[in-house]
Length: 321
Picture (cartoon, one colour):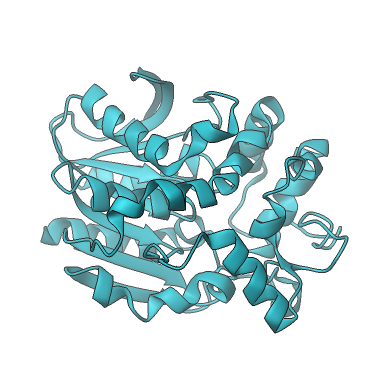
């Protein structure tokens, strides 16, 4: 397993990769606040099975970096980065797998370029079809207000200074995030994603939050070093582009994903509080859905919490193609 930089049209992308040069290509796309190394167990398992597994640091993250402008983080750029990475790796097709924010990127890769991304798997975040009645963030705010739940953190992330509590102490912010969304954390201490007035996401999580049982000190330091160097502004910019993404994807309205697909989620993933409703209708939008799995007791950091189970499901899917 090696880490190297790959020059693409718009970026120098840092990737973690392993496997035979001529093996079928699989891209593994991380979410927030993660890095390509979050897929280390999957890169190893897929490589051992004969696949060429490549996990990039995404635009705005880690060794990849990228432009500082908020609008540089729209979904079309994120998909374009993956298209260009496949080209730079000398391939014409690949399978794409995404977790958390990486799942919407993976879903859109398959939606926009099924000729290139010939199968897709999403972890934690199901495919969410474009809402025809208007952009997402006003709808999120209205739903939260009606339910009396407080603001969804995604709504708070729209503010231009929303990344500052993370930047103020990256180690504390990361420790709290990994704790509050982990399956080993008791229900009462998990984050629901909804915030009381005047409280940011970092403040909403207890100060005595500990690292999850699967997170070693050395692995945690990889995240701390990367986010201390690169900051959180560009990762949070992905959220700030949600409404712009809606505007730019009108041409995809009602389009379905037709390539073979797979969805995996943790039973205790807090993201299900605000994205779980889309799980029930997946088969209507993924016309070749090969599996939909809920892992008992698992939380949000699925590929790191339950690497053996996730590896088995991914390999079963890949080997069936």
